[in-house]
Length: 110
Image (cartoon, rainbow, N blue to C red; front, top):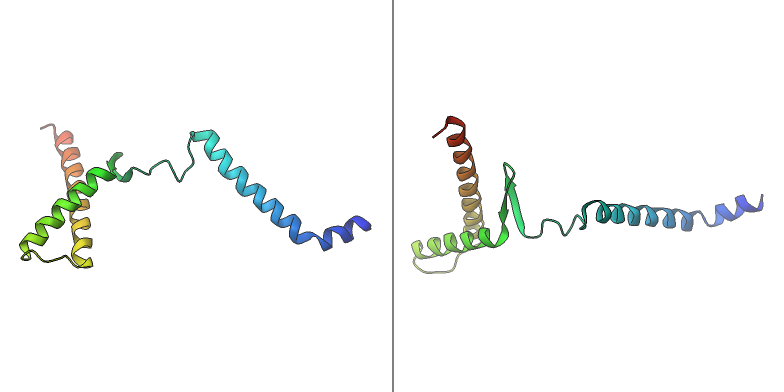
């Protein structure tokens, strides 16, 4: 009976310890299985298209180049956030089109 009272009084602490252990075990298992934690695995990648990863430095260079082109077309002023977002979408679309075209050319054998 004494043990049941102890558990009733300390149930919150037992649950917190159990959940903390479960989270720690989950993160440790990820490091053991893959060698790096899941949050550090893809830090240098923006994304992937058909298994081809896109490096963040290359992507940012393309975005900067596209943003500069937009800025020059607008008369040299600063770009508003919508235009910067459009530059990112434009570059992502270019990567997507390039990969799709490469797959299609390979599929038809050109």
